[in-house]
Length: 167
Image 1 (cartoon, rainbow, N blue to C red):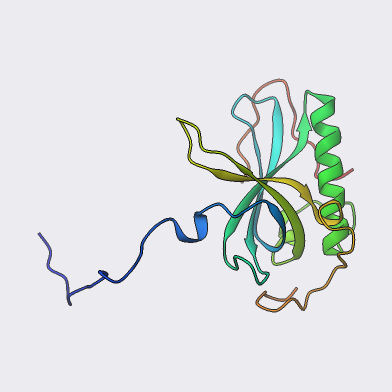
Image 2 (cartoon, helix red, strand yellow):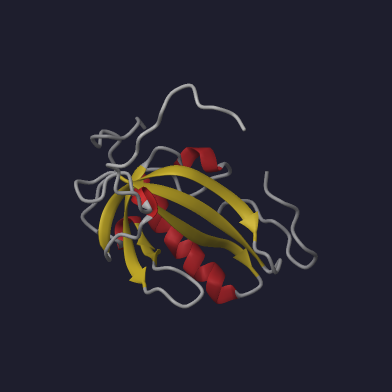
């Protein structure tokens, strides 16, 4: 047993999930804090996983995760993914052809989230249903949003080659 260097008292803390607790459905300005592309578990698709941190006056610092399909054996998933990515890229002021997820980092865009109710297997969570200009058509790219910074994918399973991140 190791002793602490000093006593720790957290009796006044309320605990809970903090920034990982779901937020109410709505549109929020959010900063992209991580983005990576990886294959789905079944190997039929590639998904761009994006972590956002809300920067607006409501729920600042709360995290919301998005998933945009970038390649799939299902053409309807690809079409939706391209639409989501185009709206996001337009909102952050990046061209519509990207080859590195780093161009997304620290950019701010609106996201529209819905609340998914808890089930027996999962707690309540958020799902991003629209990105960028589809979430808020009045949004204009800016890198001066208060409270924000300035402006190894796994091998795919047989049957689906990883495409370049462009369209």
